[in-house]
Image (cartoon, rainbow, N blue to C red; front, side, top):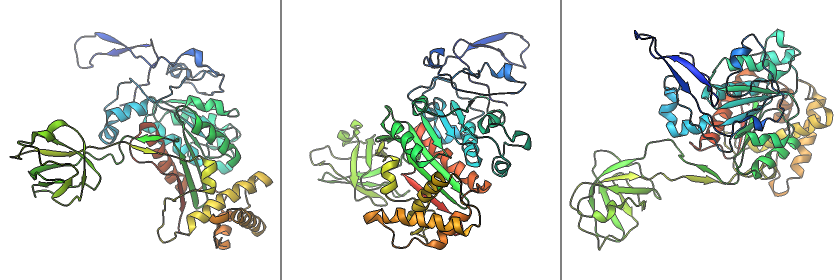
Length: 465
């Protein structure tokens, strides 16, 4: 079944009540969008959509016109009905409230080479409100090896404009727009999350500072794939709340006994091991005798064991436990304090490792990506594949950056690894783009929904090196 397009306020769609019904009665449905989605928010963004189906597509939520721009809510929210057939698997994982937040989110993906198109594809399939594709460059033959939506007929066209039609076919319920002009930081306020795949470090810092200080914060992600190496940086703001860290159902246990002590010992039946951990908050219900615990108040536990735990509460004056009772984990939101990109460059904190046998590689590659950015900004090009001269220049730049780190200076910069990094720096390999497209797409979903713990904050990946 093809997904229906999301409709704008006041748009009426005629639907058949039932194909199998003998009655030809039709019903009208008016889909209401958020009141912020009005024509007053037009900012003359350059959006391009071509093709024979432009008449039918022009009705979808706003403004597939050449100069229009969809107004975006400050916080992801949507009253859109969820298509349970289309999103049945997502509903099972995320739940309805999370899906509604996701449906109300608009995302910008800047840089439509191999990595950018993979990220956009995953977000469109996830079902966000809208995805805006940004790129000022044109399609080259080089891009055909990594971007699966390009063909030889697209060579010379703008990358974002050439990607819109095929990506829109993936999910008609998502508004897919293109932006082909220079991006300004003020335009970022129209989105809940922005992803940059092909941007200079200087410009990324400017955009990130705006997103970090914006109220409410805008989730900022910078990612790139260079040959067999890749990196992801996430900044979801100074105070980002994760409503559900792991997505698991709250753990429960059936109570066998509760002591009148300080602290109280709670024992559970030994049919199933408890999954509680020290510091967890729990809620009691249906306890007979010691009714004081049935007030629904979360209580902290410690000394969690397979079938018992200690309750940090004095129960000596409570009623005597008689029988029954259920203890349920009370899951609490977690607040994460992200650092902006400018601070993370000099103090990245703990890296998320992809290979535990190579603890020294992520800090070195963190320097290597900075060196590559400086190389490109100075020479206006990437290192030539196999060029020893370019490799030595990049190693020299990396050495100077490393020397400026002070206490964080690396003892060994591993010239051999940096040379391999330089040789493949221009290449965007499709398997790497697909893998990082999945990782970044999932992080955007986390940023928009507040469900599952996000990357915090830098992830460096290297393959087989």
